[in-house]
Image 1 (spheres, one colour):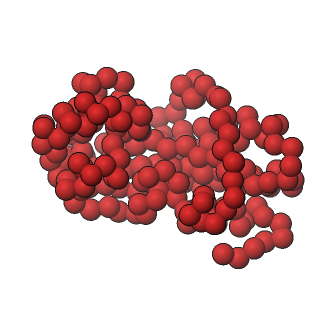
Image 2 (cartoon, rainbow, N blue to C red; image 1 turned 90 degrees about the vertical axis):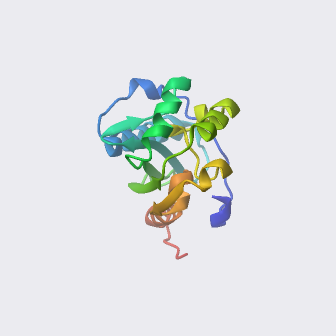
Length: 179
């Protein structure tokens, strides 16, 4: 948000994300992002634009969340050379004064070549893999040499698609502004 020129505060929605389940990654992320907005709206007393988001990684028709253990993390990273992971990111924008709400989903794909076991071992040992959907970060310098191609916007893969977010903000703002 800062790189888009917005002043912002962060808040935690404190919802039980595991209680909300859908097999379709687009539907899942949209429902989660909307649930976060619904949970936060009562706490915002000043007029503002509320932005909520959720992201999962889809791999060969499966939704990958944060790896639960080393075996699962290893399985994720090994599978990326065969089946490129897609990040599915939903964004919801709500004007707290007018209650106008817009939502959208952005999908991006990362094509990997085979990641050596020694690199996988390093990533698992470091531990950051357990905090990320799909267990990878395109910003991880250890993975950069194994990324063949990125289809879509890198900011979407990192977590918040700028183009989609700016469009949704514009749609709920009153009076409308141009970027």
